[in-house]
Length: 284
Image (cartoon, rainbow, N blue to C red; front, side, top):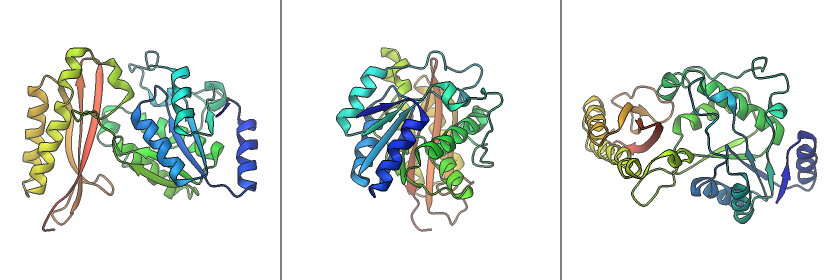
């Protein structure tokens, strides 16, 4: 696996692969990799001849009181995992490479509407940072395909809208959430959890599972949201939100909508956990 830090070297390699007629898949990450990331890399290798991954802890998507400085960084382990998973090239740019004019002067990309709900409401400006860095990475890497985990379901929809609205020639693939045996969605931030908190954390998935059963049985969404929040709180987590939405665009679902998603976020100590489950509502 090649490790590249500068844009010119990256583009030269991409150009060579393009001239050879090779399809390129891209997996952007912030590092501290886990099995969810590695699943994306392996899936990328099934869909394209060449696989590029990036590791960049993006300061634009962290709020002033969030965990940018403490965000876990494990570069040597990440490189070993990526190479073993079949990654051809790791792009690991510095902040100055991504934002040469400085962060304050950086042109920003905003996806209105879908960015302002749920996690966007709790973390103002977060999805502007996500959309900006993803747009820049797509322009730098120029992949045919990019893969994202469905655990960050709202992020996936933001990126789909970004690509559609800006006519970017990139296919976006969502890959199902990878979970621990007890149901907890894998996340780089799970490493923040103490042993006691780790035992509590699966309550988020349990609440979503109960909510999904209720939706499949035709129960009303507000009742389901309230009960799921109670399950989360009873386990010692602090609910941020539990919300049933239309899967296509995160709009409030109409009675006739069949494809839904129930999303939740909760705080456990200093860790913010997010998760979701897709549901097909019968009889619609």
